[in-house]
Length: 300
Image 1 (cartoon, rainbow, N blue to C red):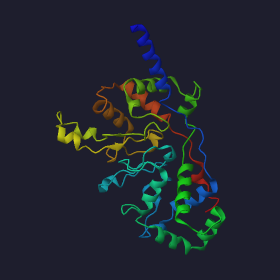
Image 2 (image 1 turned 30 degrees about the vertical axis):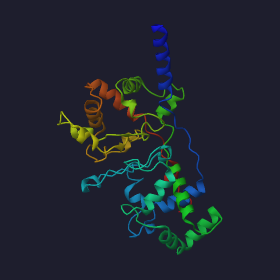
Image 3 (image 1 turned 90 degrees about the horizontal axis):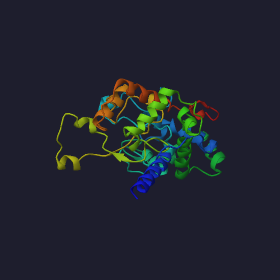
Image 4 (image 1 turned 180 degrees about the vertical axis):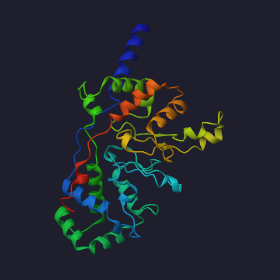
């Protein structure tokens, strides 16, 4: 009976592991709407001050990351990468939004972001002949707030970095990863990285205490301190080599340092140099293709 139980446990574990990672090979989106959304994403006129755009915090040209080296230095959160946002289950660092449309609405209206509102943004866009023409062409209707949101969502869908070497490996191409990257993937699973970094995005689907490194010098944390910890969304590891600096406070620039710190403080695992090099090599295989729409200027 014990042997049967162990066999069943083993089979369930294998099945669970097989569902832990999913390849990203294609994303569906409406190109016309996405191109309009791209124009809005870069347009500072949609903010209340007229000095900010979505791209101000989520830059897509400097290093493709959407992260920032300047904001953490000013005491602000390091922006989350917008790459593969369409495959995210929860939005914002505290996970307060669970729908990509709600995320766009809040980004437009939040005082800490564009600080606009429905009437203002519609009035601004309606005063620009080019936008009146574009909305008529794409939505066959006058400018409406729901169309503004929808077009930005379509652009976010289009900013997906797919077909990484890891995706090809998941699809059965055993040669897509070299021997060191395969060892890194095995270690990634073995030491527990996959507990938080799994699914299509290898993250972005649960909340966790991501400030564990700040408690490194405190061996004992009382119950009150534990209950007051703020949970943050576990970041995606896709394109991680492109998204420095790391952590929500942007305190670490080197990906190897992040691996070493997380292994020690979060996983309680003392990683050696060979293991670190292997996991680092595996993480490099998560870089996908540059989204075509970023360099597409057809409607600009």
